[in-house]
Amino acid sequence: AQSVTQLDSQVPVFEEAPVELRCNYSSSVSVYLFWYVQYPNQGLQLLLKYLSGSTLVKGINGFEAEFNKSQTSFHLRKPSVHISDTAEYFCAVSESDDKIIFGKGTRLHILP
Amino acid sequence: DVKVTQSSRYLVKRTGEKVFLECVQDMDHENMFWYRQDPGLGLRLIYFSYDVKMKEKGDIPEGYSVSREKKERFSLILESASTNQTSMYLCATAQSSGNTIYFGEGSWLTVV
Image (cartoon, rainbow over all chains, first blue to last red):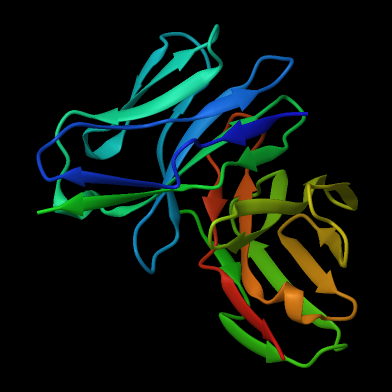
């Protein structure tokens, strides 16, 4: 069965600094991978997803993620964060059985 | 635009009451999901459905049941509410495996 581990529950970063939010998954088959964002008091929305093809995936708001099959990772990165990136970020994995499993989330705190 | 509507945003119920949470989607999606979101625990899958009258248990199905009599509607039922079921409940839909998941606004349930 698939599972998702987000290694950091909270990540503080200074504004305009780069950030990496880590995500590892376990699965015995091919997977689809997603990153979702939840801004304060809002619903979840898709940042980006990996289905197949290029392992570097670009999403909205300047975020990107790299799929690494050998390390079973899908880390999310942004080269320069803004105060508006303050949110909770969720990594998710889906196998072909349509079940979608989310990680516990990582809270990104942007420091002025 | 995609629309996932959860019938109740805020509910307060007494221990032992039967609770119905309704979710309706207007996108003709095959897959529908119920998650609960708790601080520090992320989103946990309760049940999902890949077709009318079909359902699969997620990671935490105990104390819950679901109903999908029509494609557009997926109901979550708490047969006898307990205080540990106080949570935010999120409905989501997706066309099929690998497709973007769309979330409703959530239903805050408090059991007293």
